[in-house]
Length: 190
Image (tube, one colour):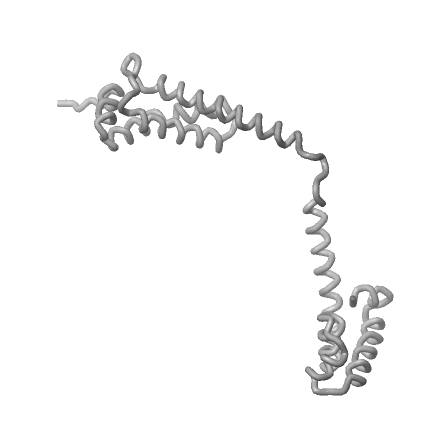
């Protein structure tokens, strides 16, 4: 005895009674056709996936009230998918119209920010290499006073030296950095 696959009508009757496995069979049977139909209507893979999901969600919700014509679920599913595609198209059109009404002013190009950050990293790498060549006391003075904005008196208290010693260290560090980095050192070290 050969076992025949149930028809869509039989599966739909089982789905109407709450049979999730029958719904899964219907999904397996028709989801590719619904997806392909949705893709042809919208031209986007991701939107077609959304439409397919929405179509089968409607099918599940309307399982007790929807009636199949000619015993097959596919035409009904394709109509539902078409309705969702039209709704999506109208929503996208409204979003585009809204975006068209926004002021033309745009913020800075993010690529400029990335390029600036790369330039800053490159410059900082040069400065760090030069600062590492300074004596430890001068490195500490540069880190506190020039980079972190700590006042000379506060830096002196933190380092356990006099304010004059901190000023001297910063001055010597600036001179050495200028020699190590060239004419741009004064600008970069800020």
